[in-house]
Each structure stands twice: as structure tokens, then as C-alpha cells.
Figure 1 (tube, rainbow, N blue to C red):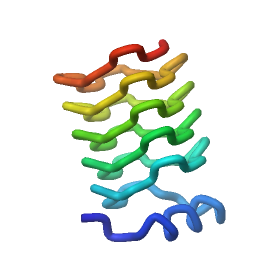
Figure 2 (tube, rainbow, N blue to C red; figure 1 turned 120 degrees about the vertical axis):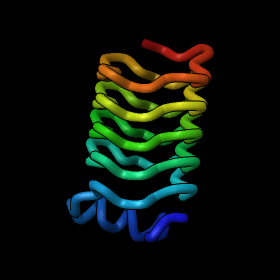
Figure 3 (spheres, rainbow, N blue to C red; figure 1 turned 90 degrees about the vertical axis):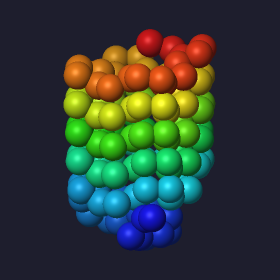
Length: 114
């Protein structure tokens, strides 16, 4: 389970504090604006990011196993070496996202924009 709360994540992000390497598994972050956030090597397994704005976010090496990203904005996001196994990216905006070496096994990408 997540080591910090939704409110703490949003406070850290607003203060410019780095979010790399954190355990944010199963955290509810739906409808949040995390544009440009740095989640490099963070664990977001099972997190709820429904309709979240992650434009230009750094998710390099992040564990996004089973994450719920339905309707999220990942425009320009860096997902290099990320694990998106069994993630739900339905209707997600992936325009310009870097998916180099990203694990997409079992990922739902129905109606995603790329």
C-alpha cells in the first residue's frame, strides 16, 4: 500500500518536491493535475489515475501494473522502461508519449489517442 496519502502527493507536487521512487501503489489520484510530475522508478501499481493530467510527466521505469488511467492525459509523457502490464488506458491521450521498452502486455488501449 502507498506510503503517503493523496493529499501529501499533491502537497509535494505543488511545492516542487521530487516524487521519484515512492510507493504510491493503490493510491487514489483520479482527476488530479500532475502535469510535469517526476514519478521516475515509482511504484504506482493499481493506482487510480482516472482522468488525471500527466502531460509531460516522467514515468521512466515506473511500475504501473494494473493502473487505471481511463481518460487520462499522458501527452508527451516519458514511459521509457515502464511496466504497464494489465493497465487500463482506454480513451487515454498518448500523443507524443515515449513508450520505448514499455511493457504493454494485456494493456487495454481501446480508443486511445496516439
